[in-house]
Amino acid sequence: MPNISIGSKGPPSPYDIIQKGRVYNTAYAGGGADVFAADLTPSYTPTTFRIDVVIDTAVTCLVVRDDGTAEVDGIMNSGTALVANAEYIFDITLTSAEAFNMEFGGACQILFLEVTEIPGAG
Image (tube, rainbow, N blue to C red; front, side, top):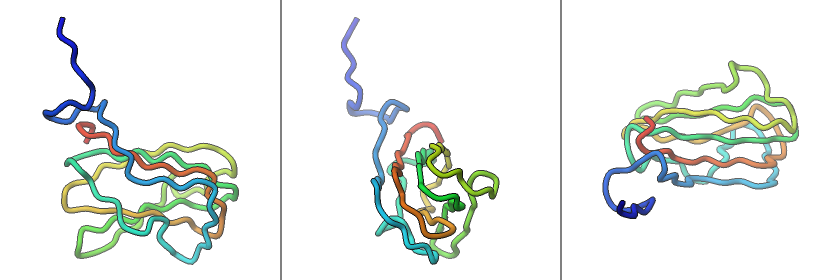
């Protein structure tokens, strides 16, 4: 049986995880500020982004999608504030026309936030 290396050339697979953004133990001031300095964009489309987040304060978590013509805010967790110090994992799907960033509904300490792209899972 031939050896097949993960990440080899060819079409993407769900095993080719791409880290798109990471924040660790950082204060977030609130006020609608973007978490990431630049919007996150897909490398492959359609694709799934996995968001893994832990914050120290019970506030809402928003995904702000932008297709170049308009922004759309989506409040994660069915619009309910995240529980402080609990870990949440969310998946969102994006197309090639979209980018996104994140916001929180108030000031908090982002204990951990990682966004990874899972090609082929869109």
